[in-house]
Image (tube, rainbow, N blue to C red):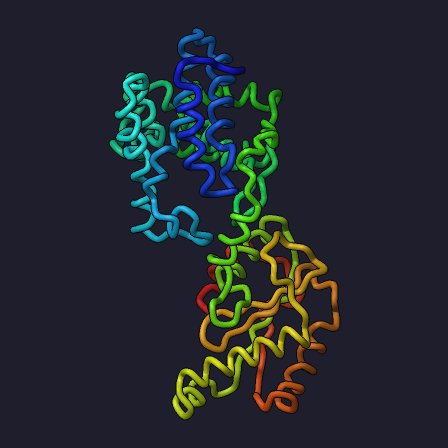
Length: 357
């Protein structure tokens, strides 16, 4: 459904300023707006309500323009301070929209779209019917779109599984039960919206540069620990198995003490080049592909080798051979330990290996 009013171009331009920042949420606001219109239609709301809630859906995340990239685009878990900053986006959205008189009546709906029905939401902890009706609608479709679209840390979640997750959220009293019941009865017939035609948000060269910024170790130019954890989380979401090994330089701290940090850095570069030459590695940050071998540099002398699917059953033997060759070819003693040897990647993999990085 399309709506036309005097501020359509300004509205789309405002949304564009947010969604150009993150390839993984491109089209999110428009999908939320369209889902909200569908839900409001199933609730038999009038035409003016439909137009207004479409606008709220488009504008609800506008305040994210005030959230630093380091937090908004962070590939890993947010800490408490970072999460509290993210939570400011609803009130920031309100402050921005206050400058546009045309949208003045929509301010409460935008401000309160992260309130939970039981009062545990933000920014004001409103309970039940205290939460504006439009906000209660947006709260449901916002979560639904987040689950059913791809994120940097996981693939999209199928409709049936997404609904099970939302059912659990309902039990925790996150949603208005009456509105959620209407949503659930109808969404399975509608399915998931496909807005791939939004090509104006497609800037692959920009996303490639961002990936290099977030996922490359600046010293060795190998993929970094954030890339490793992100790929492992994606693998876990797809029920993948993997081979994962940690490779270290023997007595590296002593080497640094003896020869200095600058020489230690040169040794790390030499080892990374050697490992690349011997093992091969995908330098691109991509979703899991079982035939690829990925090489990572964590911190200090910690390197990691990852292969999804463990297709190469001799990979561990190859690695043992490379460790021996390191002493002969670059006069550097290496050792390794296998962290995964073909097992399924567990959903709490970050807790299991994150401390090692």
